[in-house]
Amino acid sequence: MAGALILATGLVVAALAILRNDEDPAGAGVGAAPEMEHIHGIGVDPGDGAVYAGTHYGLFRIADGSATRVAEVQDYMGFTVAGPGHFLAGGHPGQGQGGPSSVGLIESTDGGETWETLSLSGEADFHALEYRHDRVYGLNSMTGQLLTSTDKQSWEEVSSAEIADFAVGPDDPDVLVATTQQGLTRSTDGGATFAIVESAPVLLFVSWADDGALAGVTPDGVVYTAEEPDGGWTERARLEGQPEALAIDSATEVYAAANGTVLASTDGGATFSPLLDQ
Image (cartoon, rainbow, N blue to C red; front, side):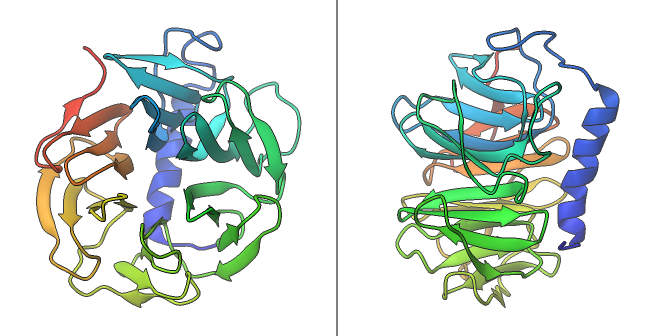
């Protein structure tokens, strides 16, 4: 599969999380007092504004300073919000669960409480997912392919470029940005080809809000924002610890995860504060 060093950084962190604790850290299932281990994805439910974190040990809902595990324990390697209470994910089954080692594309329409397998079970391990323009875009870590689907069942390979993360433009389904070892890249043909964005820093994760604002974080935790992929990128805050996930909801609201902590910014990434009460 794609061997970018950027992607390898995330895999090393995940492996260390497994070695540190190979049991359920909360000691129980849904609703247990959670202790989040390695966060793979962040999303905001547009229905109620709650923040969700897909982690190595389940999906967590974060609201009012506390977190609740809302789904059975499994490894949500890729996670995205498709609509109010509507989530898509990929990853691996939890301890003691049957089935293939990768779950393919799974879907929840009840806020993450229950999940249904839709396609590619045992064939895809999505490490990045996005739902936009009535399409699913997914990065299959098993093959390095960037895939798209309009029905969540049949898939088309659009690229096998070595990318670590990607984001889809809010105005055009064929415009994407992707992070690579060489730097941020941009595509205008649905991901078939990418060109380096010379003005952008080297980023680990990237996210694109509905209002057009962009955010990215470097491998060493520096957050940047921009109004256009090839415009000026402004340095913002520096996260403490290894960055694990990033999501921008608007030009003012940015969410990030580092060292198992979910952080929120309401000033466009200039400052971040933990979402969970200490």
